[in-house]
Image 1: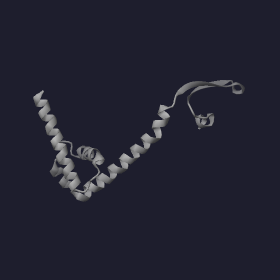
Image 2 (image 1 turned 135 degrees about the vertical axis):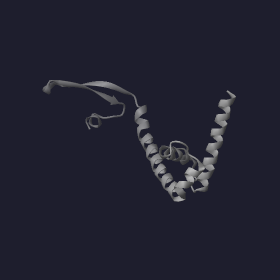
Image 3 (image 1 turned 180 degrees about the vertical axis):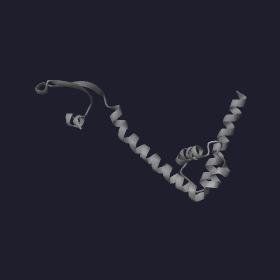
Image 4 (image 1 turned 45 degrees about the vertical axis):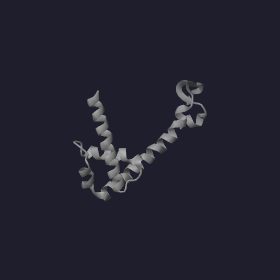
Length: 119
């Protein structure tokens, strides 16, 4: 386990160095560091180093950070919009339409009207 602990400590130290470097390059929002490094790793899959970050330049890193910021905000907005409805109780309802001799089942969430379901 000591080898595993050494690797974990090395990874933490490397993450810290990367974050410090990103801050020096103008990316001060720590929330953006992980998605930014993940994006860089998708282009440079072998190894993301400080040299890799430098090769993108300050403007490139800041542009990538702006894209990551938009992605984070979009994800937060999406989570904010879906979380309350995901918590609402739901049940399956059988809708019968006698004059058309048909019936169907729909999931009806608490607080939802039939008009909402029909949309």
